[in-house]
Image (cartoon, rainbow, N blue to C red; front, side, top):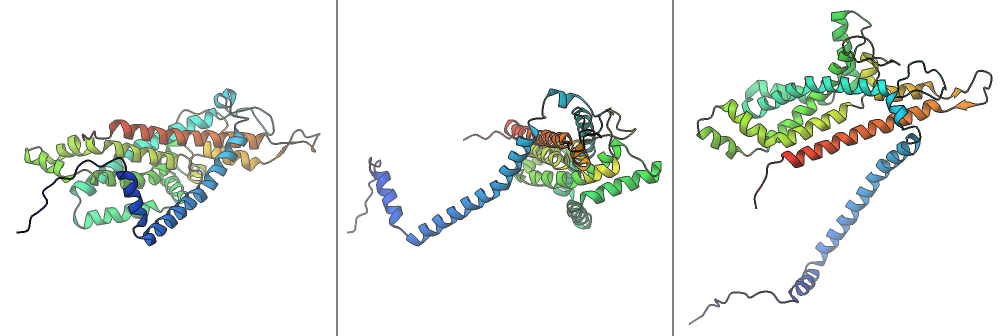
Length: 323
């Protein structure tokens, strides 16, 4: 009569790990070669992608750090002309913060509500049409968004209008599809079991969305909003059309031109190399380029700070899991 071995395997000995590694090395050499080849290709692709990133970062830091100081951050360009070694970006920082904040205030509610509709309620032709138009808006060039906002306000207030709110509307056109797409993906990641459990308790659908779905996806939604803000904060073309340029500080979004960091960088480079004085044309001042590099460094630091905030929010508000 055949007998079966009912013994349970004992604990592995000290040499079990080395024996397993030796066995794995002997199994399927072709697969090991393929794995090694793909590791080399992926590492080389990563190194190749890092070259332009490191190059751009090093160039901006090396050129901009010399001018980057407290004076540069706390003074405007009012009364500064030509190659005078003075002036700063305080007015551009104010304009960037206010215009971007208003754009986010416009875009986040619209984008989030659209995403909720598409995930929780959208069915049929209307949902497909909304999805199609969101995809189309994702590919709209920034200059077209600027022209749209300018034309809209020109019809209402007349031609030649230049205000911060017009720039905010232009940036919101670019920001809304990013918020919709990121929020939609985060809402779809919420398990349906959570929705069904809440609905089974008799909770209204809208309350399930507010109390369960949004709370579960809040980390991803906030991260998507931060990424959308970082995407629009460096736009130049729509702000040139809608906001214009200014050398003085303007806190009012609804009156007058304003300066922003990307437009400031463009403006300083546009002025080019300027003679130190009218008498000494052989001396060329590079102070405009120095201001442009320092403003570009400031903009990169702002975008980096937004990404760090997004990661911090993700870590703090991500749903806690138990092992």
